[in-house]
Each structure stands twice: as C-alpha cells, then as structure tokens.
Length: 147
Image (cartoon, rainbow, N blue to C red; front, side, top):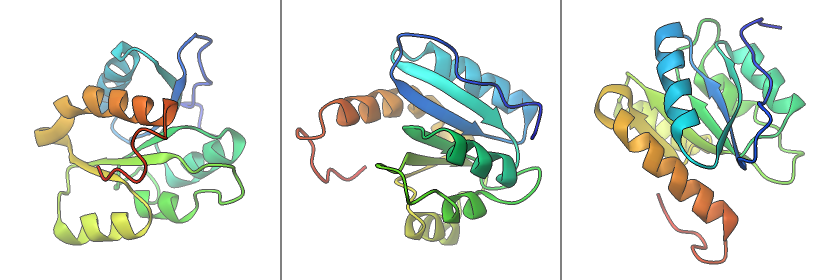
C-alpha cells in the first residue's frame, strides 16, 4: 500500500471524501481546501489507481475526488472498479487538467456526476461539496437533481 494514504481523521464532520491526485503540490492544496469546508472529512489521499481502488474497497466514502492521469493507472480505471456491493456509490467529481469532450463523455458513462477543470473550476469545489452534502443529508429534497 502507498505510504501516502492517510486514514480518516476523527471529527464530527460527516461528508467523507477520498482524494485521488498524483501531484503532491496540488494534493496538499486540495487537502487544505477540503478540510476548510464545513462538514467535510478527508478519508484519505492516494496517487495511483491501485491505491484508490484498495481504499474504496476498504472504506466506503461519500465523495470520490478523482484526477484522470495518475502516478500509475488512470481515473477511468478507478471509475470502472468502484465497488458495486456497497449500499451506495460515492458521488464522483473528476478534477482534471484535461477538459476534453471525449473525457467528459467517458467519465459520465462510467458514473462520474461532476467534471471540473483544475484551472477554471477549482474555486467551485467548496460550494459543490456543500451542495453534495446537503443533497445526501436530505435526498428527498432533490430527487434526481442533475448537477
């Protein structure tokens, strides 16, 4: 297992997020952003497809924040391997430098609900996480609401 993985921090926060990002600099910036959002708990940080898949099988999370180009493997491989035997699948947010139409279509076909460009959309992440938390807290309010 990658030593970079960090177990969930004890907290009263209730939206667990697994961060899958191969750039250490960006991963640290994302960690700071995630932990600054009220209600968000960082379940771990990994940088490869195999470590992401292992983390998802070990501990279900509410949100998967996923880069597409990883140290080893791809975010598409992670999407294909999301466990189907768990009560609920995580909400997947793809965050990539490769904002290509074919990547958007492929990610959506594999179950990604959100697709963000790292440069253009980074600042949208906190409000998106708060919206996801609100939707998960009260799913009856927004059934089938597209994002």
